[in-house]
Image (cartoon, rainbow, N blue to C red; front, side, top):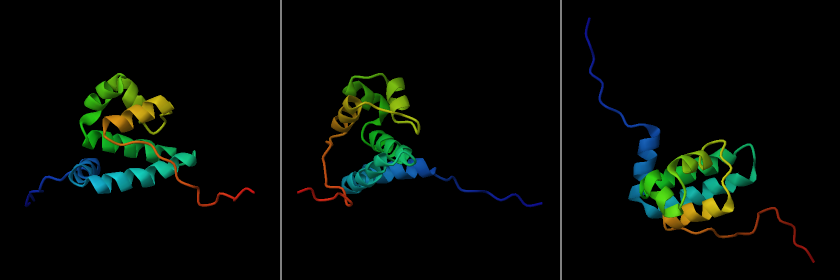
Length: 113
């Protein structure tokens, strides 16, 4: 019987965080796209987990929690798939990673006269 050696692999999460850290413009577009999912309760976790990935890439959750003025445990809960962060928490996390919240028109918005 021959034993095969397997090379070490990197988890999907680790690879995503490394890519976000390496390319700030990619991180911004990744987060913009994911945060659009916050509108749909069925896909809200996508936006929260993307914000968590960006927080990991730009300082780690411990540093981001300190900068945001909340406990690390509270940040983990807020940015979990079932999290429900306050606007204050979202703004503090974005600020801690050097980003800000902005508004764009919805694609399907009706023009009001």
